[in-house]
Image (cartoon, rainbow, N blue to C red; front, top):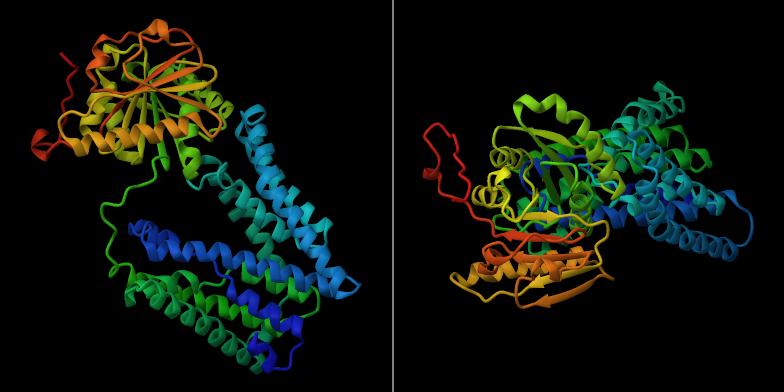
Length: 521
């Protein structure tokens, strides 16, 4: 903004310039995530700052745009903007997610329909924003915040949105920007002068912010460079705000060209900073991942799909995680099982899960699940079993838990509606620390599956099948001695046996890396 005032710009133009330079885009975040630094505190700080900064920048854009396009007193404009933002926030963060969740479950059993519902949600928020004189990009941004738990970053729907945007929306936007520009203006002295001032202002401001963050959070120089590299890139929000400023008459072609130069320089600088810093910042070790970040559901039949996906969805929801579904198949039955994948997809969509199921083709279900775990790195594994001692799966729950470092839960039975969660309290035996971790895990599973309004009840012994009622889910440690005298749940009830994760030593496998899993007994 100081740069704008120094060139005798109007107050709206200088303020808009400051806000668009304050925003940034996490273009280099994928490289940081691949380096294993996504859970680092410095990266988390930069990601959180992006949401706050872009939100504040778009609010400034709203105020400036409304003041330029609408008549009336400053007070009336301010009241309209405040009311519009409140309505937009309520619609985007409260109403829209509930409507979208209901629509996904009732209508979204087809990929195309789910994509159209997502696009309709973004357009609806943009329309609400426009009705109050707020730029549509602000509404779409808040719709993204409201929909992010329903459209996880690693899910199939997000892949479709990203693909369609990359091949259609972004090129159309860039073409529209290109039609505003004159190549000859790019090399004019005025454009180069503005570009130099913008680069100094933008990168200087981000450097100052990174240094303040370094001092406040006691970061190292490499961690500070990582934050700077993440927050320097100017891209989508910057270019969109610049085009809006041009359309409302605050910026001329020289400014738009200078901003394009700034975007190019900022992306190059960010790439160099992050590439250097990510090799010097140590990867966080021993940090516990969110339980529901990646939920893997492995089934042998489609009968338990609704129940397993319902539990998986409740586990993933607090962490905005994803649920991946797999169906076991013998090598000779691959073609026969492919139609069942569509049933799994429909069952997942009915529970609000954006899932694209796949087959686990292996002679041993347990070994196949272990291979799927290695490929997908889940934070928890749900395995569907027909009976409490299901030999047809080769003792999958126990066998898989012995070879993976993620929690494993065997799901026995099925229910149309989860109404109450029972927790079996067992005495602590053996390794006290291991028992405490197991108890903590079961408590977290109970809290998530029961939900905010669900009923939870603790019992001192493993219930007999006749004692479980439809709609009840009973959770217990799989190593509890009481499981030995338990029986299968009745129709409409579910048992969940939780296996504490453990990793076997390397010498447990054979020399060529092959693995042998034996059923109990």
